Length: 85
Image (tube, rainbow, N blue to C red; front, top):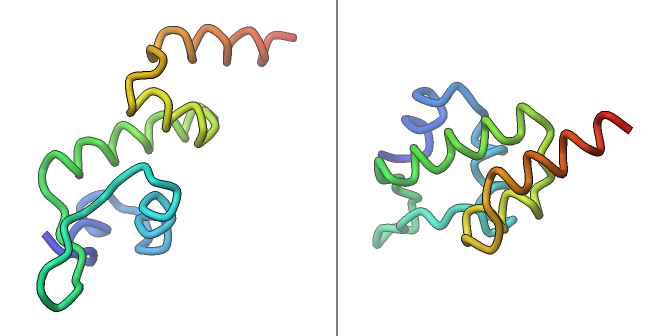
């Protein structure tokens, strides 16, 4: 699905989708015209990113989770510790 369909489905702005791409969190397929096309896997990844952002997980930590450098549990425990101090 193209960016307009993705933003409507996810209820986020196209700016946010482009920001996630710029930060290296997602890499949507580009067709021959250069249009972004989001797969269902991309949509699920974006939903996960949105959840993590909703609980104020920093972009760098999200990147590490998505790249399997750390576990979600590790990041969450560190985040909870920071919030409680």
